[in-house]
Image (cartoon, rainbow, N blue to C red):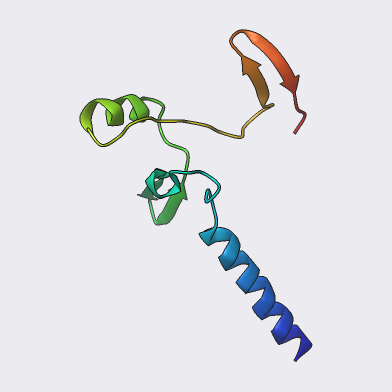
Length: 91
């Protein structure tokens, strides 16, 4: 019974966290994430990594798109302001 209650609580916490994603932002209902869903042979591929030119194409072809942002987590993240490197984080 303890394991069942613990599993339910963990699932509930996960669901609450997922529904609360970006809720701190005043316009949270206007934020979307674009993903890739394709097939590679028999393999089903889902990813949030997309080609860099997609942001420019979306801005040019979809009037409802107000702004875009592209990010990734590969390599060593660097926090930059203009050309100055402010922080280097080891992953």
